[in-house]
Length: 153
Image (cartoon, rainbow, N blue to C red):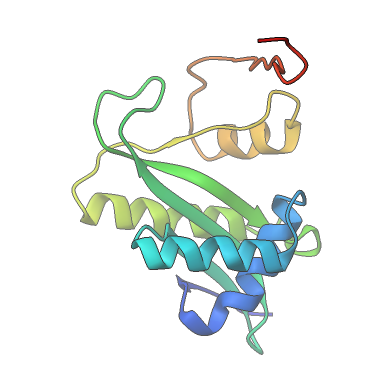
């Protein structure tokens, strides 16, 4: 099996949305497609790289957006890994590292000198991947929410 890492293309939309739905299952592939269409119309599509298997199947992706601020970073804007995913059947083969390497090359070529990312506090797989890739943990955060729907005015 040979894997090619490249920038996402319009013809990849269906496969990209399928992978996005596996990483973020709160939305269906169709909802992800609608979100991407909205971003495309606004001109804010993330910088995205895909891992393509021989035969054309997408087996991984990495999405990056520019954020004005990221914890622990000194530069602004900073490329931020919004999504980094490889199919479970293809993990442990270096595909995630190749996607990250492509993102790093893009960042350096575009004048950036640091990357940022995050992961859920209980996502041990993501934490291990970030540490193996050379990221340094800069903070831990628990986010809180309180609904005010039932509160009288």
